[in-house]
Length: 242
Image 1 (cartoon, rainbow, N blue to C red):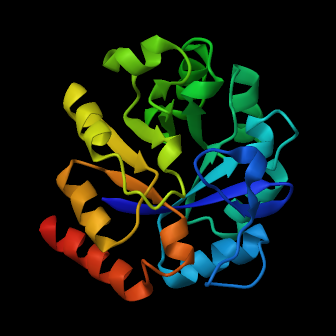
Image 2: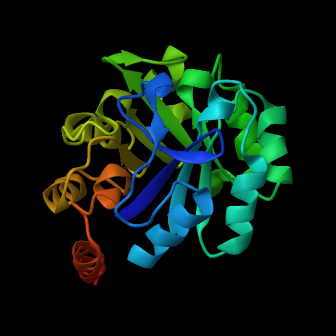
């Protein structure tokens, strides 16, 4: 299981996401570094742990208010060893192509931004199956976007994200039942958990529920998951792999 830090971009800053209430997000206050500049936040996260991937939610792009392509491209250029997964409200093939043309090949297709499966197909054709994740977005128990994307596991790419927006930044714990349900519906699919992670106990529970990766933000910035905890967990997972 990989631990994937999340940065949410709004108006050129990293903000604190909570329960998907995007109009109420404010610049992040992190114990890891002063300020909320994207480069500083990513540098602080990578100093905490050499993460292999970082999830970037471009909230301006998701809401149709411009985007942060140049900012994310600069992050990718500075840290080429990190896979920056971009969630930017990608709703058309042209949307996907613009990010790929900027050198950003890891695309997240959020179900809330879709009308059908054509954008997912376009992303897969552009980048290949290992560089696309389908985020199955749920808010207040309601599946967002086309029902087919949620219900027909045959449409899923190799990675799906159990994005429970109500749990993001909530401190209520991850949606373990939903993650386990998605993993059971298509054996072999890599399920990422998103929302609610509080501490090492949650990470252990996620691993037991078949989670391939977990998206984390708040617990990193307030040091509930510190460097020692992260190092122990990564070592434990590597040992389990033999």
